[in-house]
Length: 258
Image (tube, rainbow, N blue to C red):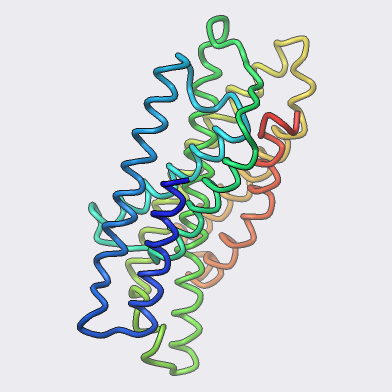
């Protein structure tokens, strides 16, 4: 809950700095609060994993914490590496929501055997990373769509002046989608092989089917964009629609949905 409070303050501070910019706003405070909350969440997940000698994916709460941690970490990585800052208040709000929902779910576990199937850890880790990448691309695509619409309608200033330029957003979006295709593809391949070779693998078919549909749609989007067959705005809208099957696949992947 301490992490959730830090992310809440980060979101509120960044929103206030964006809507009422002034010399006293100190917008960088929201960024540093996001980084501090992510570091604290990293320490918590590491301590929990070392204490229980497992990865934080054996419960719905653990998976949500991992997804929130990955989304915030990816936003920080883009900021520090590519100087491409996603809206801090959006990232902080999404991470806070993951942490809060995880705290309400409790600590029920649905253990899986990783000693017999160690690749299951790779399967789960790749899936979580892929969903974090798709979520980050959805936020990036939303910013692209708003900026493109504002330029088409000749709207300048206000919130539109706070958005990044179209060219870097399009470039980063292609990188994010490409990485999501590779990581989700790795997860789907491992999961499909396990489903067809395990006696109880049929129970995982719904989530694999939805993850496979997400993979195919994401792959089609990135191929069409890199061949310039679709515009940047169409690619952004497709990235937003891609959230629907991705969220459904994520929901079916949570342990409590099995």
